[in-house]
Image (tube, rainbow over all chains, first blue to last red):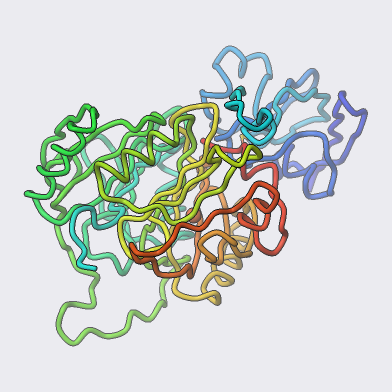
Length: 114
Length: 308
Ligand code: FES
Ligand SMILES: [Fe+2]
C-alpha cells in the first residue's frame, strides 16, 4: 500500500492518505477535519476542493457541482479523487446554509438563501 | 377505512452517474431484483416481495437526483377523477402514454410547487413475488444484499412545501400526520403526509433550491433486519450518513446512506399506523433534533444540507 501526504492549505492540517482511498475518505478515516463530508459519492458537492499541486485519479462526479472546465483545472470533488502523489489543496465546498440558519424572528417569513 | 384514491408510492426514477456500476450495486448490495432495461437504457428493479413489475428505475445522467416519483391509484376511473381534481386545483397535467415505462399504463404527470415531478398511474403488470397467490411459502431471505420489503416513501426538499401540502391534501386526499415548526412557531419546516394507513407516504422539508431529493426509503421487516442492513453496508463500504438509529417523527428505526451517485437512500422499520381521525403531531423547533434523530437528540449538518 502506498500513501501520500495531503495538505489542506486552509487549515495547514495534513494527513497521510492511502492510494486506494479517496482524499475525503482518507481524511475521515483518521478523524481529521477540514473538508466538509456529505454523500462521499460525487453527488452533493459539499466536498469540493481546488487541487493546487499534485496528481490524482478520479471517478465520475456530478456536473451540477463540477463543470468540465473546473474538472480540467483540478477543481474537483474530493470524494471522487484518489492521490497518485502528495497533494496540496484548498477547500471550496461548504455545507450550504439552510432554512434553520436563515430563519427570521417570529412573524417574519424566513428568507431562503443558499 | 376503505382504501381508494391514491394507494401507495409506486416508483421512483433516480438519476445515477454511472449505470454500469449502479446496476450491480442496486442488485447485490440493496438486494433488489433486476427487471431489465428499456430502449433508453433505463434499468428497472423491484423488491422481492413487491408484486408490480418495478418500483425503482435508474437513469444515467451527468447529475444525481430524482427524475420523478410515482403513486399507484386504484383504477383508471380514479386516475381520471384525480386528474380532474388536480386541474380544478389549478395544476397543469400531462399524460405519458402507456409503455413509456416498461409494463406500465398511462401516467398523469404534474409538477409540485416545490418543483418535483409527480406521477399517478393505475396500471402496472403484476409479475408476482414468486410466492404465488395460492398457499404461499414465507419469503426466507437467502439471497444477496439487504432485500427490503418494498419501496416505501420519499423525502423531498424544496421551497414552497405549503403549496405541496395543499395540493396533496385537497386534490389527492392525503392526510397530514406530523409536522416540524420553525422557530417562529408558525412556518412549517417539514411535513409528513400519508395516503394510506402508513405514518408517511411522502415527506417534505423547506429548502432554498427546488426539486431536490433527500431520500428514497425502503421498508425492512424488523430492527434486526436494520442492523443486518448496516452490516451489509459496512462490508460493502457503503457511505452511511447516520444510523442505525430511530426517528422521533413516525418512530421508525432507520439508516440513511448513499448510493454510488450520492443519492441518499433509507432502510427503515416500524412507524405507527395512521387513521384519518388522528390528530397531526407537531414538533417544536427546540425539539427538532429529537424528532429527526431520537437517540442523538440533535441534527447532523448533513441532514438539512446534503441533497441531490
Ligand atoms: S461528499 Fe458529496 S460530492 Fe463529495
Ligand atoms: Fe424516510
